[in-house]
Amino acid sequence: MQALPRDYGYVHTMQNATQGAALPINQDSMNFAGQVIDQLKHDILTGYFVPGEKLKMARLKARYNVGVSPLREALSQLIVEQLVVVENQRGFRVHPISHEELEDIYHTRAHIEALCISQAIQLGDDEWEANIVAADHQLKKAAHLLESAQSEQQQPDTQEQARSHIQRWEAKHQAFHYAACMGCGSAHLMQVRKSLYEKASRYRNLWLNQHMLNNQVFDANQKEHDTLMKALLHRNEAEAVAIIKHHLLEPYVLLKDSKF
Image (tube, rainbow, N blue to C red; front, top):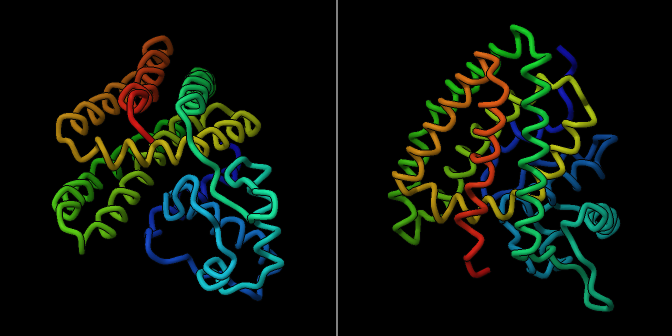
């Protein structure tokens, strides 16, 4: 098996992240600027900073305990990644979301994910299969996180904890899909997949908060995971591709008529 690409660390960092506190930044690290970029990106992707929100320097400096220069470097990088926009003479904002972007990202992502799955079935080895089974086991064990969030979301003083539990479940969810795709054997394809996953994150957070606490939606989601895993392990390429396309487009179907 090839070495794990960089998004492995991103997926697993999410498992320990919360909505309310920034992850610690090691100012002695030579990769200090990269850490600032990663943390700010994490806060945008998980919804700590919401789409369209103004990114005030004073607030960013306090949250990450850094000066203006590394923040401007981080913001410039996230402009390139289309997560931040700059307003002439008015600073920076989180990139807004739109129905047009929602449709484009989700349909493109479904095709790329299907390509990853197709190649993984052709090329994946025993370790690939074992990683899928292990990730599925971890995902099933994480079901209690959504059960906790369901009750916590009803109370104003525990809503932040509910969002944290939802994000922890989402990290296990994405780890399962990552394990399924990893067998494709293409670092470049996995990089494209990572970019689309990140761009879809802000829309997926809407889906998670609005729908995944619904028992019927969660049960259907879990059944699709079970069916997908069986198709992967039996090397049924056509069935697995059809399942993953339907699975990834489900949030789009539920969100396309939403107001945001």
